Length: 357
Image (cartoon, rainbow, N blue to C red):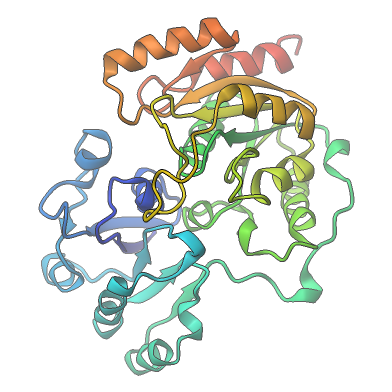
C-alpha cells in the first residue's frame, strides 16, 4: 500500500473532515501514517474519531509530520470536503510545504491542483505529482444513459440519507463488507472522491461529471461492477439527499442509474439543521425520515429496508433509546453501524432477497 498523510487543518473529527475520517477508518489503497491538524495535534486519530486508538498520530503542521515520521510518506491527501470544492486559503502553504518536502499531492476538490501554475512548477521542480480525483474523463469517453440497471440479475441498494455529510459512504462500506462476510457476493460502487481514494474498484466522482452524462456514467460503473464480478448485491454510495435543496443532482442521479429494489437510509436524529455552509450553519432546517422516505418512493419506486443512525451529539444511552424508538415508529431495523454493527440491516436484506435461496 502507498503511504500518506492527510491534511485536515481545523477539521479533523468534524463533518468537514469526512474525507480524512473515511480514509482513517478504511482504505484499500493507502496506509495512513499521520494527520495534519493543529487543533487536535498530539492526539491519536482513532481516539479523536471513534474513542479507540489506532496508532495514527496527529501533527500540528506538515513540517512537523515530515520531521516526526520514521519514513517520508509518498502522498499528502487533502482531507476536507469544502462547499464548492475550493482549496481553503490556509491550506495553500501546507501544500507548498509538502511539495517542497518531496511529497506528491492527491486532492478530491473541484479546484484542481494540477491547473495551478505555481504548484505545477513547484511539483516539477521537486519531482512529485499532483493528482486531482475529481477530473472527469474526456468528453468522448463519457457514457450516455441506456436504461440498463433494471436488467441486471442482482440486488441494487443505494445508501441514501436525510442530509449531506451524514455517513452514507461509511455505512455503504461497512454494509458491503458485512454482506460479503455472510457469504453474499457484494460489490461496492463509489460516487464521491473519498470512496475513490479509499481504493474502490468501481465508481465515479459523481458531482464532477457534466449533467448530460452523470446518470450514464454511474450506470456504466454499476454495469461494469456486475459484468466483472457477477455480484448478488451491489451497494451504491449516496450523495447529498433527495430533499436537500443545495444538492439537486446526487441522490436523484443515483436512484435513476441504479433502479434500486430497496434503500438503506442514514439519519442523524440530533441534527437540527442541514450540513451545508460553515458560515450559514442555520440556513436550512434538517431533513426527516418521513420526507426522505416519501421522496424515495416517488423517485426510486421502492421502500427503506433499514435505518443507519449517525450518533452525533447523542450519548450512548440516547442512541440506544432512539434506536428502539425508530424501530417501533418505522417498522424497520435501526442501528449505529460503527458501534453496533450492521447485522440487523444485513439480516433484513438476506431475509427479503435470499431467504428462499
